[in-house]
Image (tube, rainbow, N blue to C red; front, side, top):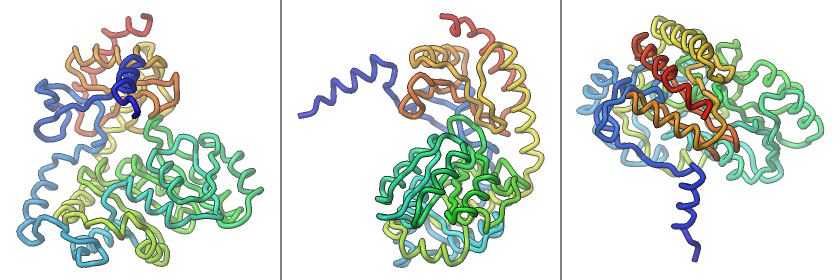
Length: 386
């Protein structure tokens, strides 16, 4: 029998052991984790909408009309008018013809990739794509070719030597590095080589582009340029679930073929209506996004001046590169002693030797909150030399 206890002990010895924190109360910059009040800089609630009064009120008002549970899959009797309304809103907001509401971003990626590619096909995946994309590629049973991160020239060469149905999949914003994919160039090379482009904009939706429409909209890319657009609703939108948007034909095809859509219970319809309310806040949230981008610029300037190694990101994801697993954990623990929650990211989430602290900023953070983080980082600089 496999020695699971020894494997766990080995993870502890190499700085790879993970633990869960128990959070009480709502998600917000100052939260209670394991009974301790901490100022958090590790949430994906980029616009501060997870605890927004308007979203909470929308959910509360919807419950008497919709009930709580989805009760059945969308293809049985679970497709509520609230789900349909949200799908129409998402399609219009992203400039697409149609949209589908999935339960999670993980399920959306796995469902889409495995539906659109199969045996005999080839999927081309950026080397730094999210785990859900990687697993979707495996599930598809297609041949998978990974291209160097953001390297469109490398991808073009691979596409040129490959025949048959071709699918190119990329994150819009990469979750651990915070950089934005070269979407305009990717769209062009896919057009030249007859490949279908799929963009997972989980970390760009709500933050980038006009009115927060996302990374594809920031580059002015249409449904023809990016035929499949995926986004999650548990990050900048502050609710839960995910969506896939594109042409009516492709959305109909996914209804027939995407197993993670067909064989799962529909999300609570009240949650769909709360997400509609959140879309209103995103669409009219330019002031919120402006504040967020001011925080990002200030953090980058000050943290770099302190000697921290930042990655080239203009998004709310601001990784501090450390390298060593144990040193990253030590810095995370030191910041916690200063009342700050900033988690260490280690392999296999990132490559060996690339452990980091993943600082994420939110529009709900104040400049005083940022000052607290910068002061703590200043106090803990000695750990970079240990």
